[in-house]
Image 1 (cartoon, rainbow, N blue to C red):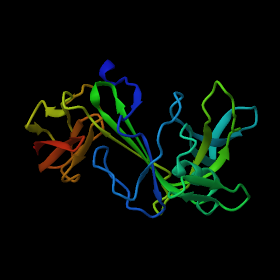
Image 2 (cartoon, one colour):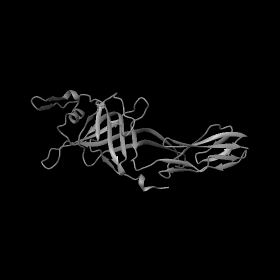
Image 3 (cartoon, one colour):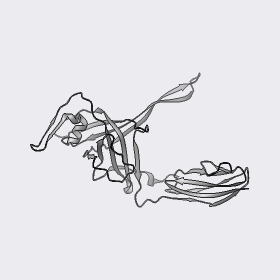
Image 4 (cartoon, helix red, strand yellow):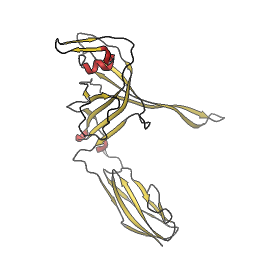
Length: 263
C-alpha cells in the first residue's frame, strides 16, 4: 500500500555533496561510510541540484496492421548534470580543463589555466545527499566522463558556474552507477510471517502472508526443496510431494521462514 514516508526530497550533505577521485579508486559500497583520502571535495553546486538522465533508446517493432509487438533497447544512456559554483577551486578547474592544463602556485597565490582540445581524465564521482527524516543516499559513479560543458557566463550579478554533463561509462560488471540508501534511525525495518509451520495436502495450495515495515515493501520468496513444495512470488505455497520444505520470505536483509509439511 502507498506510504507517504517513502516520499522524499534530496538535499546536499552539509559537509559536502560531490566528490571526485581517480578512476580505479576503491568504491564505497554503502551510504554512510566516510570516504577515503583519495576523494576531493568539489565544493558548492547550484540550487538546481543534480539531474540524472537514465532513459533507454528504444525501437518499436510493428506487425502488419501497425500493432507494436516488440520493443528493442538499442542503448541506455546514463548521465548526470550539475553546475559547480566554485570557479577558483582547482579541483573544479581540473575537471573542466584537464589536470595538465591547470597550474597552481601556492607560494605566489596564482592559478593558470590553458584551454585546448586535449583529452580529459575520467573519474570516480560520489554524490551524497540527505533525504527526508535524516535518511542518507549516496550515488556512486565508477567512471564519469565529461561529455558536455555549458556556456560559461561572466556577469556582475550572477555567480560564475561550470555546468557539466557527466556520462556514466560501464564498469567491469557492466553497471553505470550505484545507489545506496541508509534509512534514518527513526525508520525501522521489520518482516513477519503469519505462520511458522504449515500443513498442505499434495496438489493443494495455501497462502502465506508476509508483513513488512515500512509497509508494502517487495518480498522475495523461496523454497528449500521444490520437489516437495513450491512458492510463487505472492507467497502461495503448493504441495508437490509428501515430505517437508522450508519456505523463506526475504526483505532488506531480513529473512523469515515457515516449515511446510506436505501430506
